[in-house]
Length: 354
Image 1 (cartoon, rainbow, N blue to C red):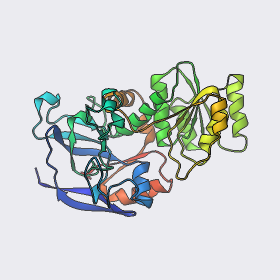
Image 2 (cartoon, rainbow, N blue to C red):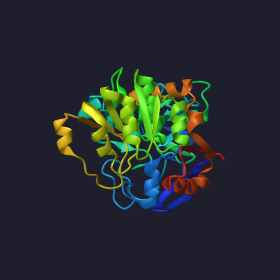
Image 3 (spheres, rainbow, N blue to C red):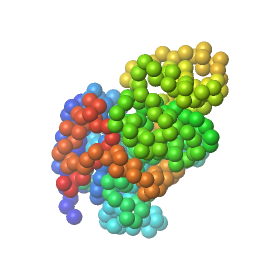
Image 4 (cartoon, rainbow, N blue to C red):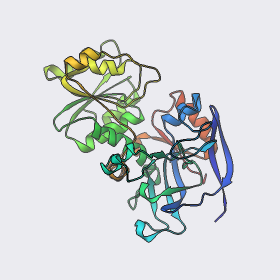
């Protein structure tokens, strides 16, 4: 095996370079992965367009210690290469999906099973070198074996689906609830898949008319509503006097959290998934007087969500609906630009061997 590799390295806003660098050496508890598929998300696009905001380019990250240019990629699968500790349960040659987060396993949150809130949390591709490269070193604690026979493209979106699945768990949904999902982009679609996997629930999706709502129907949405002047009235007609039990805001668009507050029933729940780009005003009086529960969600819990996401991908056509293409690493800047300007409606993947 070569000791050099190519990688997509973030330097600054609009500056991601394909560089040659040393193949990483796994530390204790880690293995080396040969990357087979890697993906990008809205965080990568935001940092490309107007960062660095969270990437530790100019200041050292308190947990990872990384400072400076960084290899992108927190959504990836790969083949285990080289020696592996037998205690890990993995073997060389196995195809695995990786979670994004590395947790300590010792702090209070880790012991509660909320590893995504670990005091020493480190995220591959966000504050430590990630998988937008030919190789990456990762802890075995982040890995799950890809089921035999599953296509590489489908497995390549396991991590972002795990984020949607975790969000669905956090929403406060119960069997029989009626849910309004605002936004059916990639993350909204993953949340929809998670809801349908976990609960017996009726889901209405709100978004602009067109292909995204059509896709939502194919993936299990019970009703859809187009954004427009009549949207509120159309939603009320669908839900009737029973009202909306849970509203999930997955668009991040300005004003949508307040819209969720206005739409949810008294005693209902709201989950905020999307991240607005500006500070939002909300009606706290309405929240208190209606006893509305507001939940949030962050990343995923590897041990709970990653394996389940592979199960969903194995039995649905979610990957075929969402994946728009597979590209060489040399295309990363072009694809980040397209994603940051809203021209990608699903997911794109990268294959370093192309």
